[in-house]
View (cartoon, rainbow over the protein chains, first blue to last red):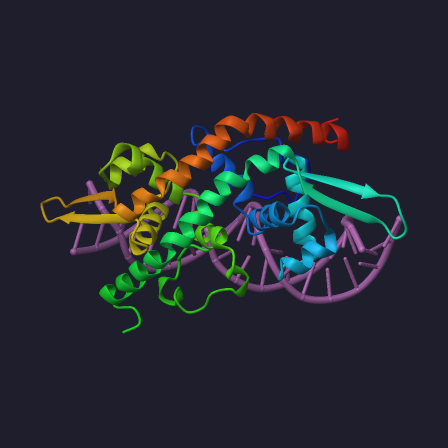
Length: 134
Length: 134
DNA sequence: CCGTATCCTCCACGATACTG
DNA sequence: CAGTATCGTGGAGGATACGG
């Protein structure tokens, strides 16, 4: 899932396989490890500062958090506001566009809550049947 | 996004970061490059054979298609039926559980269709503002 | 406090060749 | 037809150190 490590050539080319599957287009952007976690946090807690986010998303490195926030900002999903104080205070919040994503995302969350147990069960059954674990 | 290249130790450990974010749990399974495309195809066209899928998902390698289908089968989302004829005929279809995923997935698709243009626009605006491209 | 710069590791994905 | 086996690679993601 391509995030933008080299931002410079991110606009250059789109893989042909993406054309015609909108859900893939979207997941190519937010399907990475941290994007939806960030969107979730900003959706629930509202405006947050960098370090605040970093603490709540335990496990994220500074690099990845910055990178994720930049990508979301670039795509118009997150608004970044710098308050020129000393020390600097930076606040992140969802844009209106970002808020419209919460619905679909909640759809995924709901499905996961309702059906993930079945998935886990199916997985174990499969492993027993095919003889992993035993 | 971990798919199962080495199927053997796939059950062994779960990253701690996943706990408590159901949408991430889900995306860790179907957020890979081909899963939702396969689910989409099987959802729309119904029962399909291996080569049929391979043709419709143009660009997928045999290895990746097999791997994706196996993972989906293991998770109880896809049913694989082998017809012992000569030559062998294998058919894939969504399970009832697999069908329940279509709703949430359509949610993503709808969002993408409605808002991806805004995302693209925001992206260009950002690039101009920060001085890529020019 | 809020990042950037650098280096490194690991594995998802692809290409190719072969099989029941 | 429907796969398996093997090898190679790009780049996502982490650790660490430094900068405004």
